[in-house]
Length: 194
Length: 194
DNA sequence: GGGGTTAGTAAGCGCTTGCTTAGTCTCTCC
DNA sequence: GGAGAGACTAAGCAAGCGCTTACTAACCCC
Figure (cartoon, rainbow over the protein chains, first blue to last red):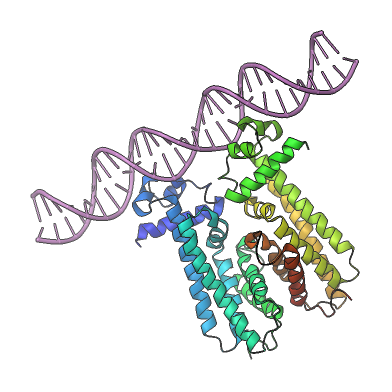
């Protein structure tokens, strides 16, 4: 991935999160990246390919962070706290990509949508398996693992919707707060650390 | 509001939630409502006015339901449960309008955005005041009321993002489940009913 | 029964859109 | 030193866009 292609992706991320995929023109993306309108097509076959590149890389980055967070924990409580903290903070820090990923999903081609859905299932699986482990260990008290997973993910993902830089809480504080709230939600018996 | 105008709003709700505001053409809305392309402009001055009508009415309906739910409860726990149940169920039942309201907000004119923001503050206020009351009564244990309000609302609002008819749980079940999870989140000391 | 309002249409205007084409410039490799 | 490849642009095409115009048909009230 060359330098200009990355610049185009940054420009597209700004524009898409600002006005949405469809309201963004290829001319706008090009000029934000300092290129002529035709310059986009040297690096991407279409506007949708640009959206897909953003969406795929965004999901991969989020997944990799979650896997790393989960793997360093020594207990389910610690693992869940790390996951919620990481995922919430990521959605605050990368709220622009987060919005694109969530709100513009429907503008991907069916083939690209499937690729993204596979990544989403991986992310979902990371959260769910920590819950399963915690329930099996008697550390969590959860009636419906699927419903609880969804509620926890909602808390994290929705951060991208309302977060704006300069808000009262920093991304770190949001992460810490959501981790604490999430542990309560699953009825964690022990604190995550200590 | 005449019959044809309501049909146009239904058509626009379908189209906007399907493809997004900008990707929807006025010709599409018109033909879904059984009108010629120009027929839209007899009832609405612009495509954006149609979006605003949908957005305003959606917010008002949600607010009225929440106020009604909160007012019938005799304790903060019961009130919070009713609010979470109602709000979650509404976002499942009206997931199309819910998505439009959340995702297409940025396509409103600045004036219309302000009207909608006022409605959102009212909705936020309903939830927050139940939390405040519950904390003051010693029934809830909440560190940061604003952060907790946001997390609870995320749980409810995000339902519109992932809900599809025919999913495992019905809107009623989603409402009941989210109410239960929400009570845990605020550390409710007593059950909501009984 | 005729003036005025309301709901609707056929046709199309002016503009913007995503993307293509044909060509220039620069760098590399032998 | 020239052939070839890659990055980029100026110009523009075909299609589609939101919305307007000029008009007709139906209805209401006095």
